[in-house]
Length: 267
Ligand code: NDP
Image 1 (tube, protein in one colour):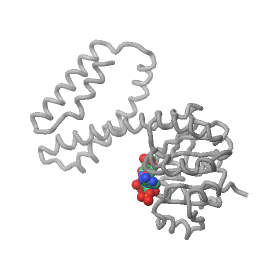
Image 2: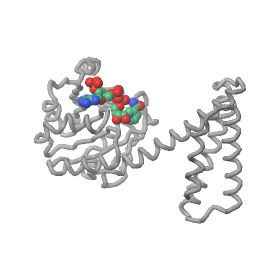
Image 3: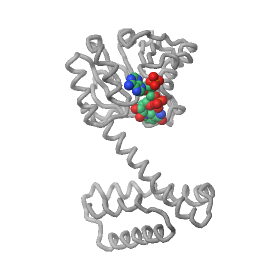
Image 4: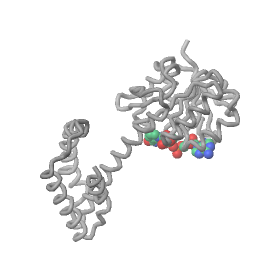
């Protein structure tokens, strides 16, 4: 039969994870601090555990997805003795250091720890648009990869438990950087009463898409370790200065673009 799975944490994401396991026919036990959030899943066949201890002992594979690591430890420290011999897959967003510390904690308890970073939103869990990054116990990942593949495309990055968080946060940083630039752009044209939606559809999205296509070239340059030419540095400096000056003159705070200049000056 299929592996029993436990899901601890039934926020927007935890519910989507549990649903993917249920849809594939896995016996699924769920627990959430606010018990009522388990109800839609129970209606779909999940078993609601009364306690965290009951949830942990219900399956060899435990998936945790709560707000932060403080919440993870608040829930699991009291039931640490029950974790021995189980695979703990923590999909809670945290720092690489938190992941490494939690991996050490789990190892001392005799648990197999896998840390994960979800590169998806709840509605895309279980679809090709979902990718999940993993690192930590290779053994646990290999044992449970078929189950984990139900959530999205699984990518195992290595046995250093911090690698998934490192990659996840790097990707999130890139996303926020793009959003920061986009919001600045909308605000700039907005000063001349250009609707953000029109600007975004007609110009911003096509422009950013074409620029995304340049990234592999820039990455190859970064890998080569070759210095960017002085000419190009100068051209970029002029452009960045013009962006900042024009934004300021239009009454828009350009502090979202300023750091790019600082990063470029440092590299
Ligand atoms: P929600 O706010 O929807 O849910 C938070 C969950 O954490 C709830 O189950 C909540 O329980 C629980 N929780 C919070 N604090 C505690 C605590 N002290 N003790 C026990 N349980 C606690 O968040 P999401 O489900 O969206 O996010 C969960 C994780 O998934 C986060 O780390 C997030 O970064 C990550 N993630 C989310 C994505 C998304 O698009 N939503 C995308 C990628 C990653 P209760 O119901 O009782 O409040």
